Amino acid sequence: LVMVVLLGTGQFAISVQWAWATQKKILAENTYPLKAGPLAGWRSEPEWGGPMDFFLDKINRFVPPNDKVLMLDKMQIIYPLTRRESFKGVVFHFFIDAVQRSAALRKLNHEAIVRHPPDWILTGYKMSGLMQAPGEPGHGLSVSLPYDTLVHLLKLEDFISANYQLVEAVGGYAILRKKPAAK
Image 1 (tube, rainbow, N blue to C red):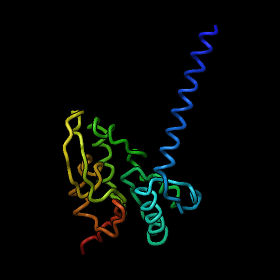
Image 2 (image 1 turned 180 degrees about the vertical axis):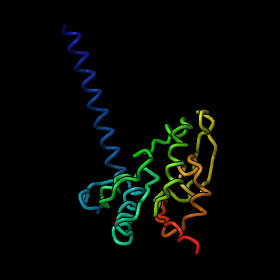
Image 3 (image 1 turned 90 degrees about the horizontal axis):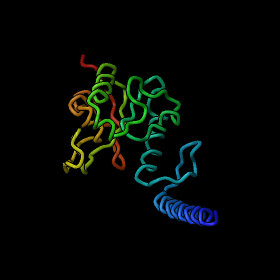
Image 4 (image 1 turned 180 degrees about the horizontal axis):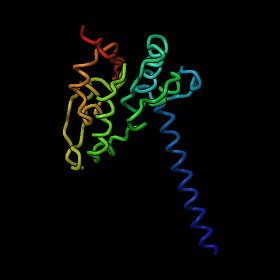
């Protein structure tokens, strides 16, 4: 019994030490104080928080309330912070690994976007990095893409280029507006 208590105490101490080290690392990385409404003062990664604040302001001031906005990245928090419904027909939060592995998921999202194009798209912009081929883990390619990896995986580059115009790009993200219909 004494041995079990000592082992348990040792495991607990290791867990606490790991949790403390992880928390310190997160706090060190999250140096940007958010300005957005209910999240004001919360700290986030500067690469994410600054652009999010910028685009929240842009959407709240310039995007008409009835226009549909599609967030093609990890900032789905933009929907409630701009008092908008999430874009219907696509998964709410994109997990790149799941999208890479599932042709059915890629097709579902692609068709939802192409059949009912949003008025605005917010996505990663001018991205570069390592991307894995679907179904081939460990076989990465170094890529440079005009849009987020997700746009590439969903095969939306040509669709977006043909139907949307860049409004503004900040910090690796861009907001695009649907081009007016040809007269």
